[in-house]
Image: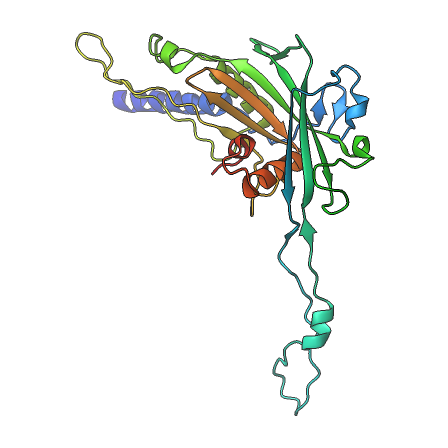
Length: 294
């Protein structure tokens, strides 16, 4: 009976630990794309941003042919020509051909311009915030090819130049600095990632790995590997990779050599621009490599 009482007590303790563990498990967060930044929504015209300077800090251009999506068709049953046997006669070729549906996406000329407001910063997170600076605004314009001479913008450019992304820069510890810090040290990159997880849920392919450290008798760790900093993407493109299916994707990245990190918001139009750059004359485009999981 003594051992039974001990076993029952142990089971109750284990049950309590299991319940506490389930209660402590973070709530699953569903990804909801950012709607824009501050008082501006995606696709707002550049002309509605009164605080931005007149000249951009950078301009890029790209060209792409329209991409044909997979065809879809509706089968029109063929009229039977022989005795009625109940067998399927198949589709009427010409009637089905008339119902063939082909859709296209993307294409044309793309122009990306980036702006920043001198001295503007942003505190990311309500508790223990991380300072984001500079804050960069992205604007995309797109129009069909052949309507204007190459390199000449259309007269209605201001009506096409739309808010298509944001890039928030931040400083984190470099790989060299981390070598002199304890393995459990929380970097600015870690803090930004935790805030993004709380706000947008887990990114594609996310797996939080544990860290194994082996101590010697002298107290020195035998783990000499540098810490790894992955690029995490929320709602990246699927299929042919042309663009995200969300209103905007979110991408976190860090250069461990310089300690420069960024959080990039990108609408489908900004994805198209990056795709056009990568596949038409600008192989290895920085923005394309940032957005894509390849």
